Length: 149
Ligand SMILES: [Zn+2]
Ligand SMILES: [Zn+2]
Image 1 (cartoon, rainbow, N blue to C red):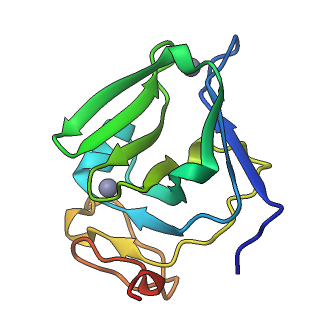
Image 2: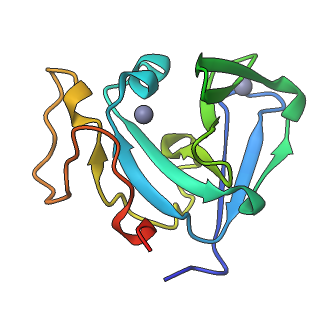
């Protein structure tokens, strides 16, 4: 299932010296998150998250522009200090992974995986309608089924 040759690239919205990042291979998993911690900081109704192994992830440009904001004690969110784009975060319960905000990938870039579930649906904004996509919906956090073993 892993796509060995695949490389995903993304970055912030700066025209000059943007922050650029990449990861190699398929993410560990991809999910839709409706928690208010993700949505409020992103100004969006949902977050689309790729959970990527830290060893597969690296900053390739503009690292000096990256700032941190802890939305809670366990969530360390990285954004560009110039354009404000929130690209990825580190969360203490996932010490081996970085959580990438998929929409900050280049649009032509491969993601390397498809979302497999919706989490924190109890926090869904009333104006957002979850599409009838057949994916499992979890009121709070739930791991990807493949993570159980
Ligand atoms: Zn920027
Ligand atoms: Zn979230």
